[in-house]
Length: 91
Image (tube, rainbow, N blue to C red; front, side, top):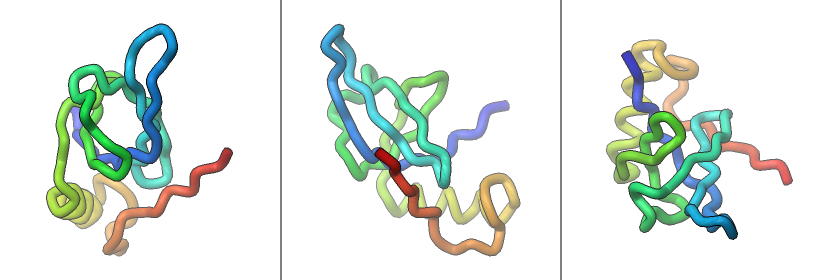
């Protein structure tokens, strides 16, 4: 079973060899994903990533509800937390 955790896009770039990529925050984890299936995603959008590809766009309300539910059930992060973790991006 795979859990789709919403992530917020922090940065987007196009590779010179082809392909559009994004740095995405999942709580305190920051991952890179390919935007080939959803090339119109923008910084600040929420998405669900599987196998390194952004597959689904989520509106902020849905993302927050999903994260709150996951925290409530202890699946993701601190169940006492009410807001998503603000990622700290280091250069």
